[in-house]
Length: 104
Image 1 (cartoon, helix red, strand yellow):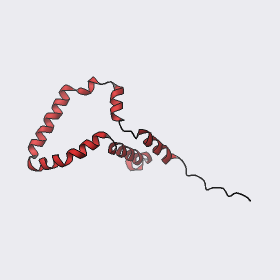
Image 2 (cartoon, one colour):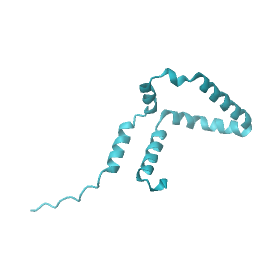
Image 3 (tube, one colour):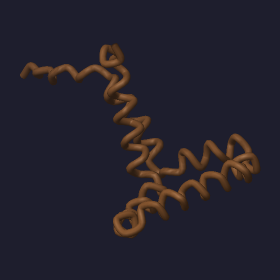
Image 4 (spheres, helix red, strand yellow):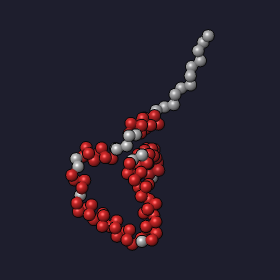
């Protein structure tokens, strides 16, 4: 049923492109090899550490210290927001008509 929605694929590709250009994605890419090796050796410690970190975040709620505008700025922190909007607009526009032949 969801596959029939024409804008779903476009939204998914925009979200994927946004995440690939976000600074946190780069940090995750750098941490991935370290975490992968550690997860292979100590999976229980990694899960326990993630649970502790999630609990601390849930208790402290650091996002409440930021305004809505600051949170929005953090989400849209890529320098490519204008490019994504342009790409979205270009994908929705109709193809250009063929060039007209000039009479001599």
